[in-house]
Image 1 (cartoon, one colour):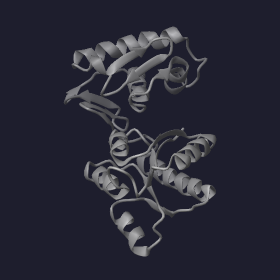
Image 2: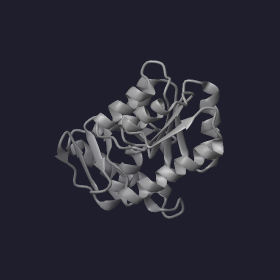
Image 3: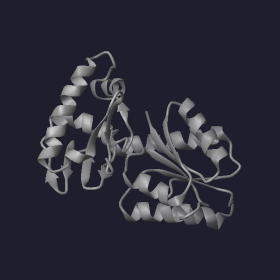
Image 4: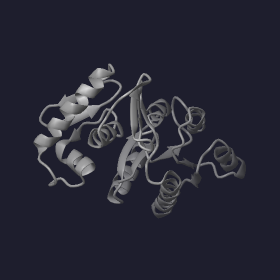
Length: 228
């Protein structure tokens, strides 16, 4: 399931894209201003970003510029009412992977987005990019994790659990969802197994001073985030 960040200051557009992309089988997070978009995208926890150019607080151009300067290479599809060749060239020069002019066809947006995701999958070998939450760095390509430069010794299952949680920062993830993401099937193991492995992971995080990042959301699941 691709995780997509949608950034647009128009509530109606955000709602429509959230509904439509969710129906396409994507996990969608939607925000309405530049600073919020930058904070979310800098975590590296998204597979793609749909980014409007005209935003309050920080323009889409500047958000994109900051992302690329920080080494975040998440594919970005710029969306704008500006249809000039210079505008499109500016966006692509800053590191955008696509440019779509408003008003646009939702079918075309989905086609561009899926094409970007396919290219990304081919480039990354379907492993994903590093996730960064404060001092926590989770690298799925190297299957390694560290906090403030201190490496964590994790089993494959512990790593998969940490990656599943860190890839959805500050979002509570249900036990059944963790079973699907980490064990491959919600019926593959019991919820108690999730609790056991969360306990293992918590001890490993404690050992490097990162125990505060993992929190239990009672009656639901677990959450990892820089503000946890």
